[in-house]
Length: 501
Length: 99
Image 1 (cartoon, rainbow over the protein chains, first blue to last red):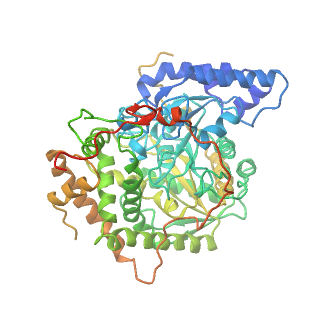
Image 2 (image 1 turned 135 degrees about the vertical axis):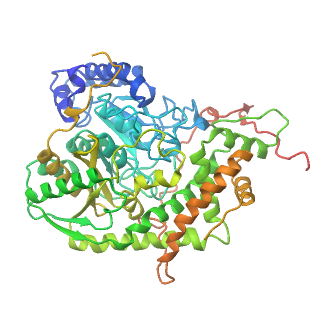
Image 3 (image 1 turned 180 degrees about the horizontal axis):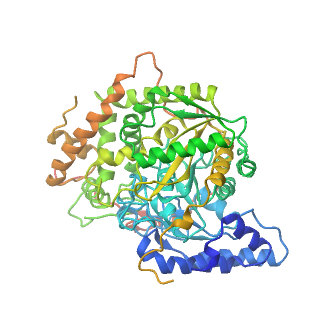
């Protein structure tokens, strides 16, 4: 493996901008790594070598001519989750419905990445339409966890997190509706951030649950995540739910955190996100992380958020309801798959047959669940009640943040489970997101940062940090301080099997 | 407690335009029943005095200036169409046999 794939994004940017190494060399090193290991990991659905190298060359040329870099990450390549539109390469959302679809426009996130000079290596694997916690719901086969080939890399953004874990990319973009950035980050030993809802534009993010979906950075360090956060965040008139306010100073906060001092920071441990159903090694890792936060000077107290236990049921009503409406757009008429268009079938029949052929079981399950929850007679009991729970969860957060600056919990109750273990048991799969969902429902910011390896199975565990809406910078200060105190984790990543050195 | 029948699942599939198979109906009926049983828990705390939240950010009426902006060209709009004819989307016949 080339040394160039081992550096952090911040280090690579410094080398590229100082003309110590070119962006083309860095990009090629990652493309080579993808060529060597991706048959094994399967993090990518599509690799765009030509596009990435052309973007890298443009950065090198500009720097060679003496121009200032377009952004602090100009020249650093990146992997993009296949749910964000790219007008030069396929965008499938992990679904047969969109196989080979080349969108006619770039997502705002994609456009910002291009303008900031980040070569896009390719599109990463995901659960179909971001519905899942393991990438097993991808129509193109699962991604494997680089820590253990037999295990899941989390989901829905398992491809993004696995790509940075396997050193195929220094950075990646994920999207988080119920934990799809943070849970893959936790089980792969990498950093993942769900920014405040509205902090990053949703324009061109293929919608699953519009009131919850949020794109964010995946990285191997907290500082790298902060640098990427600043590239993609900010107001966008193309998304009416985009927040028209300055981006929180996340890079400055990460740098401050690296000074290793959390004096004056109040941390709340959420009582309800612990106990039964949590793996012993996860809880011990979490307790160790809390002790380390104390050693860094933080004041730690326990905080009760009594309605968090209702977050999972509320989410599995709200998200499917919004999905049943959003996915009505896949009607076989204007784009995407169409089957049975043989003259014998009406448009209605073609639509139903196409959706049957194009969607996988989890997507169908959620569409029907949402259709049920929104139907007259059941609306008040299900969807209406779930919306009220959403209010109660927001109130719990508001009350907690009166007392503390950030809240902490494990990111997910277990380490990576085995591929196939939960695929036929939807409720068991849904439990993966029990700690991450509250922040989606309330719209506040949350991060997963690795808290080491579980003592019973040697697999990564994530510490979740939650901050109030628009206070994303607090995540980065606490996360960066903790990360430095914790020490390196990815140096313990086993050599990928079947890969020649 | 919800108890969703196979016939109800078939009705939902029809509403959602999903031509599910008989085998799927059996599987989905069991699974949806289990999921609904679990999510019904929201009713325990959803009192009448609690206002619903539909959205995390309380925004209303986000306007922009009424200025014409370039959109997709006809060619771009049709670029992903399963079938196009004479610059238009070609769709299967709208009416069923019985109509």
